[in-house]
Length: 256
Image 1: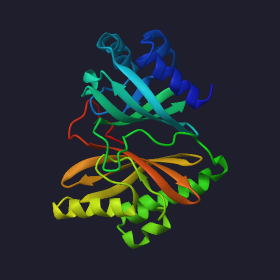
Image 2 (image 1 turned 180 degrees about the vertical axis):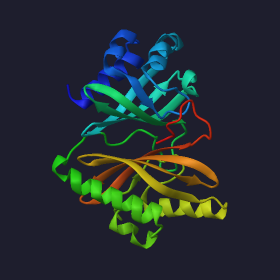
Image 3 (image 1 turned 135 degrees about the vertical axis):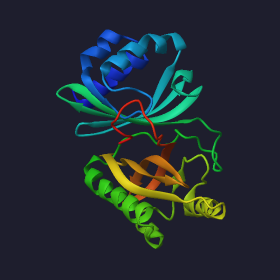
Image 4 (image 1 turned 60 degrees about the vertical axis):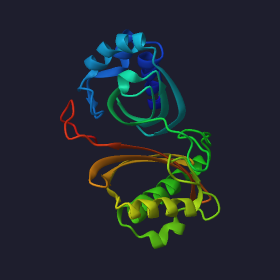
């Protein structure tokens, strides 16, 4: 099976079929966990499955992006009180090795009302196209994160983001470069800075590029999980899940 098939089968065993035996066959016993509240290893996951079933949790996967042995799922969890809120939007990232899922990262946030442009956190284009452009699109988005978000060279933003179409799914930001500028200006007026310091994960497939970065929102250590859609060598659509990085976790692996 491909890494994507292995991940989707494992994910279905845990969250759809609630089948510990099926999940055990594809989870590495020494599964490395970066989700802050979940301990290392397959055993805690397998032991949690009956409670998930009892809770009535359900999941909708909106997008699946994969590159080599990394697979990204863009999910909505409903009836998800066991995970922290009734309804959550998440990016889940899995690493596959030797036919098993061996590592997991995630960011989760509660569902919000539509943003100023009326868009939700998960709607929009889902079809993967332009596979021949994967490397170029990955380079473009990596350059955007490093040049604009990490180094603050905002005068170069039109080298990366389309001036004609920029569809925004962040809960607080409207479409277009004007919407982005207005949101950042409002944050500045409130004395809130958004700083990306480390680009930790990049996964690209065709017109989609996912990045996971560390930084700060104000004074709070923060994980930024971003998904970009690229068209004609410019970013034209963006989704994100932003979450605090807690000081204490259920393991010693860190958020990344």
